[in-house]
Length: 347
Image (cartoon, rainbow, N blue to C red; front, side, top):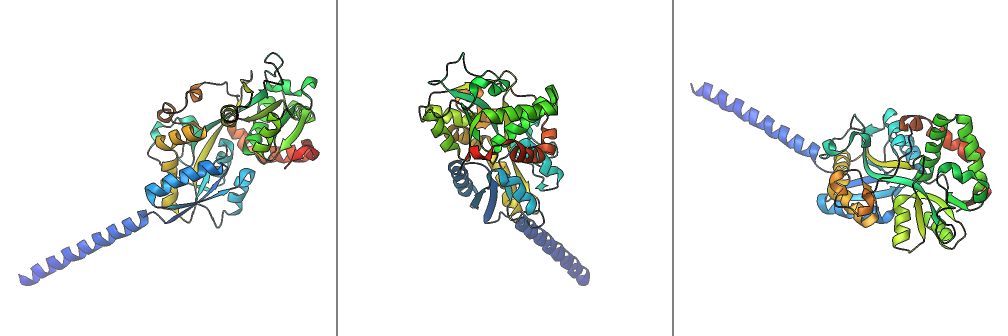
């Protein structure tokens, strides 16, 4: 009898030990790492604010590395040995393409069910956190509303020659704009007409700027009249810098980028990466980014706590982001090598 009791007690002890080990392993596997590395296209001020709040909430230190138009290429080059955990910023087409290349890890943030399906990957690999319309605008001191362009096709008119400035192709918004225009004109006319349009547009563009602030400075000084930029930057320069700017709601629609976030596959800090995706797309953070940095939320619950101008609807250009994703790299390469006049580029 004593032997039976001893065997039972020993068995119970072993089971408790296994459960304890299992719980210990689970807690270790779920534990947040001390560091998070983020590759991004966003501005330093916004990233600093997000980083501060994330560290305050989680204790995880964040390192942001801004790569602008080189973001996707950097992630691809490190596929076999990832150096970052998160890709934050860049348009839907880029995320579609990198998902197909197997570069992302699935995540399921707490707000997933609230986010409209048009702003996320159906398989859970990437999520849109910011809506970024790219729109034409003009200096109202130099051009009246009746003389201003009404659509993208107007930008090739002789009357606008040397009145237009834009960002160069290192700008993610400019890359998206060029790709959208190629897709739109290819669908409505032909690919040949799309490239003809870009050739004519290049002839009318006075300068391409590497820096957004330098471009706006040129517009403010009257060195240029018309430009193309993300809506949030136009609003910010209009409100904070008192620049006389007016947005054009293009007849064929404006480019609307969804800036996304994704955890990278085989990242060095996977738990912190999943936590960051959940954090940065939350209604709380989207509303903070909206109010402090003029970025339009993708969550309706964040939109109601954001500046009123963000609720205004602008016509979106009808494009196929999956087609853009497959062709963007080749299109941009052709744009850079065959179309752009490099003598017009200002760094």
